[in-house]
Image (tube, rainbow, N blue to C red; front, top):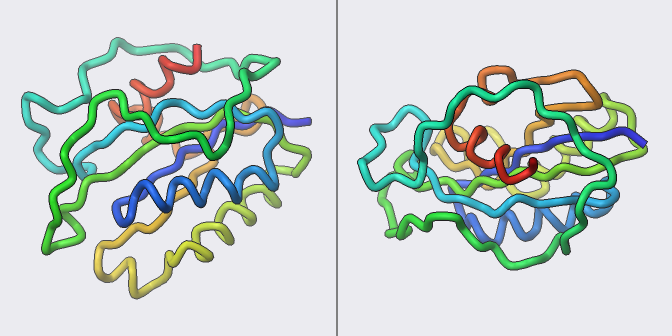
Length: 167
């Protein structure tokens, strides 16, 4: 079994899409532990002073702990700090719902990553959605065993905040 860390995000039908993602991930992950989900503004947009993201001091490499605390993949989303989601005319302005999952898998890295992209497409992620700024589902493999991916994501405040709930 291989230890993995995956980020989940959506800016369209967020709660439904993350719920569906957790169901799909149950097919490829063992002993998943899902962090609480948090709402964030689109990356790069100005964050207000009442944003749920607070500065976090730098943290070292995360060690994926075994055994991983299990949690139901269809558990309700309980945001750390909810941001009211008002309908937006521009999907690029829609809030994101973000979550991490730490788990184990029997899949090799390439196969797992391919399966994640298939799950995104099954949720409606395609060129047209991208053109409109809609992200029905974004699944990123952040870590496979000791190898880290999406290195810029590790510096984003919401990822750093969610990582603290895994330790």
